[in-house]
Length: 219
Length: 278
Image 1 (tube, chains in turn cyan, purple):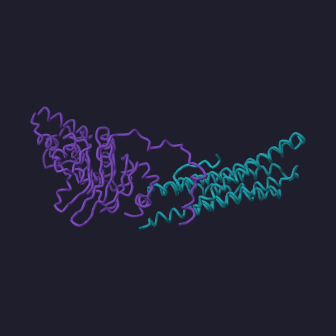
Image 2 (image 1 turned 90 degrees about the vertical axis):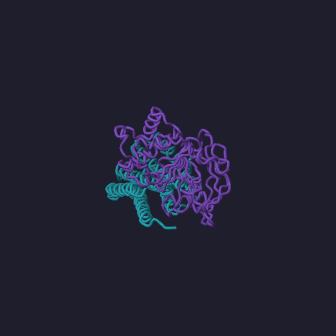
Image 3 (image 1 turned 135 degrees about the vertical axis):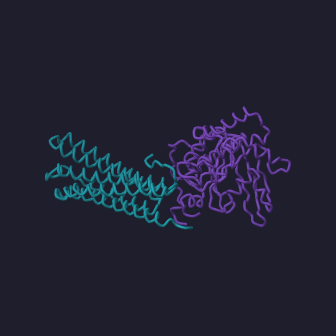
C-alpha cells in the first residue's frame, strides 16, 4: 500500500498542534485554579494574557485543516478526522476560555478568605483536568474503550457540581453578606462542570471518528 | 489486532440516528442484474463471480484501479466485449429480466436499449446533424421532419442545443472536446436507449466541460439509468447514487455512494478512495 506521505505528515502535524493546544488549555485550567487557591492575582493575570496564544493556535489548526481539505480532498475516515480535529480544537479553546473566566473570578474574589472550604471544588477541578488529559490521550491513541469511562466520570462531576451548588445556595441564605463571593464560586463551579462536558464531547468525537456514527455519551 | 479495533462500543451504547438514512430509499425496479458473472481473456480470469444489480434511474459508478476489470465489465453489459475473440463468459447479465448472454438475444436489439459513450469523444467526420441522425437512419427513419425532431430533442437532451443550433450542418469535428462529447451523448440519446454506459466520459475533458457533462448526467438520470466508469473519485462521489469498487476482477464493495465515501465497510475500499493505493 503506497502511503500518502505528504498528506499523512500534514495530518500528523495538525494532530500534534491539537495535542499542543489541549495541553496549553488544560494547563491554563489547572493554573487558574491554583491561582485561585493561592490568591495569586499575577498568576491569574498571566492566564488571561496567554489566552491569545491559545486562540492563535486554534486559528492555526483551523487554517491547516481547511488547506488540507482544499488541497487533498480527503474522504471517509481522513475527512472525519479533520472535521473532528476542528471540533475538538474549538472545544479545547473553550476550556482555555473557561480558565480565563476562572482567573477573572479569582481576581474579583480578591484576597478575602474563602467563606467555605473549597476542597470539593478543588477535587472537582482535579477530576476534570484528569478527564481532559485522558480524553486527549484516548484521542491520540484512538482508544475507544476510554470514551465510556470518560462519560462516567462526567456523571461524577455533574453530581459534585450539584452538591457544591446546593451547598453554596444554602450558604447564601445564612450568610447573605458574602453573596458576591458565593456567586463567583458558583460561576467557577459551573465553568469546571462545562469543561468536563467538553471532555465528554471530545470522547464522542473519537467514537464518530472511529465508527462514522454519532454517540450520545450523556444519554 | 489491537484493543481499539476489537472494542465494540455498540454493545454498550447505541449510535444516535440523527441524519436521515440514505439507504432507506424507495425501492426501484432492476434494470441490469448481473449474477455470478465470470469473464476470461484466454486464460486470464478478468472478472470473477460478479453480482451487481443496477436500478432504474440510478447513476451507478464503477471505480477501481487500472486493470481491475471495470471497463471490461461495462463493455460486457452491451456485449461489446465479444469483439475480443478470446473472450469466454459464464453466468448471467439480465437486462430487464432477460439474460443478454443467451445466444437468442439479438445484439443489435440490446445496443438499441443499452447505449454507450466512450472515453475519447468520437463523433463521425460528418455534420452535427448527421451524427445525431445516424442511428435513427440505420433504424429506418427517413422522414426529414421526424429526423429533425429527433435531432433537436437529442441535442437538447444533451444540453448543447444553444451552442450548436445555428451550425447543425457544420462538421462535428470542429467542436471543442467537451462539445464533441455531448454530441456523442446526444447521438446515444437519438436511439432512445434505456441504459447509458459511460466509460470515463470526462477523462479527456477540461474542468468546465467535465462539469457540464456531470450536470448533464444528473439531468439524464430522470429518464435513463446510467452506469459510469470513472477514475475520478470526486466525480463518482458527486454524481452517482451507488458505487461499486472493483479490485483484481472482483467487486469488493457495492453500496450507496454516501456509504462508500463516508463509511466503507471494507478496508481495501477505504484505502482506495483515500488514495492510499491504485
